[in-house]
Length: 208
Image (cartoon, rainbow, N blue to C red; front, side, top):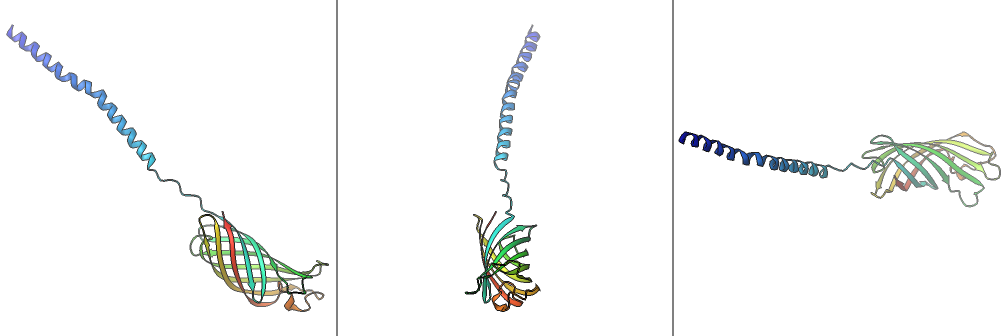
């Protein structure tokens, strides 16, 4: 009988020791799952936000000091890659008083290489302008010139998109379709004037 009692006591003791461990298992599993969920949530919260897409377009208005003449242009530029952009512009040349019957307009095509990112920082520019000088009452009476140019400038762009800048360079005009009727006094045909001259600009625009 004593041996039987001892065996029963040992069995009951082993059962009581095993029960708390079994009861604790579900609690431990829930704690582990909760901690895992919190870790995943914190990982999602700490994930860095995506960088905004770079601005690749610009509309720019330029005032040209084509010493000693003046012009105004409005153009569009498009960034291609990290440091390169191309553009096109329409340019209007202001005439000397008394010669407004001779109007001058030009189409310019340009490319820019930027030291930093497009539309911000130092840039070098090459351009080719097709210039026309015509008689207001008879637009078919006109003179045409090709005007290549080189320049160096700087542009600053605010985070809002506003851009300001300036540049300086040289242009070389060459008449390709002269008229014997108009531009008899070449110095008053400012858009198609031949030879080399300075071209200094002040720029304002918007980048988007």
